[in-house]
Length: 291
Ligand SMILES: CC(=O)N[C@H](C=O)[C@@H](O)[C@H](O)[C@H](O)CO
Ligand SMILES: CC(=O)C(=O)O
Image (tube, rainbow, N blue to C red):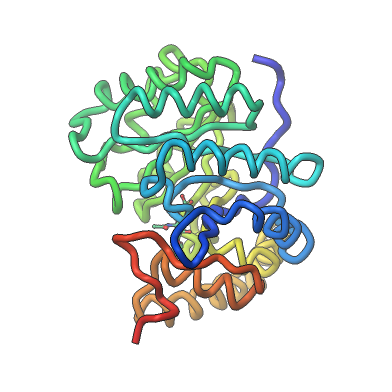
């Protein structure tokens, strides 16, 4: 694998813009890229994940979105990571090959969650079959047990992973188990792996443990603020970093009480950015219409 550029800064989990009648709204992505770069100072994206309703899209739609992000992000974005996870291996592999052919900066895969892997070996076997379809592309395991129900500890998964998945680059860690995260980082003495944290309201805690970065939905509209938190942490000015984390916390605590999810993220982003993100796809329902 060729030496890769290092992932720096926040990664926005992209929203999938849709038209009022529920089709993918590709022409909006150009404006979306400019908004992230110019207004939020966010130059990395994670496409077709949770926030992007990746598992609610057809394979064709996922390919179109990946292509559009690569095309519009050219010379503007630093890293485009494509989530290629699905419930069946052939689709994951097809998406991995498609992403690799476009020269993406990384691919990520969630654990399949209908028939679930019951132990580390089963999970790694699945991931390996996807990663090997993109032998030049950095590979991330996307750990999100609250949604997949697959609770295999990442710390366990890391043992010997490079031997099975030579492209293994790290983990998008979307769980509140900071013990597991800490043990991963502790094991990663040589710093060969990246741990991108995915619970935005707790990012500061993860940074204190040594997380390498963050992927999340809130960086679409709180990217600028969160960048200030990262700067304060790096300085280090922990009191200031805490103030920024408290701000995000206060905001999220408020919206979580009202019911916060991808539908609400779409409505919120539409009003903050002025970019029409449209309704979500069923089973999610339009939050701008909810009473
Ligand atoms: C479940 C989910 O969507 N998690 C996102 C990323 O992993 C986060 O960015 C959250 O949206 C965010 O932390 C708010 O809870
Ligand atoms: C939030 C996140 O990282 C995702 O949408 O996949």
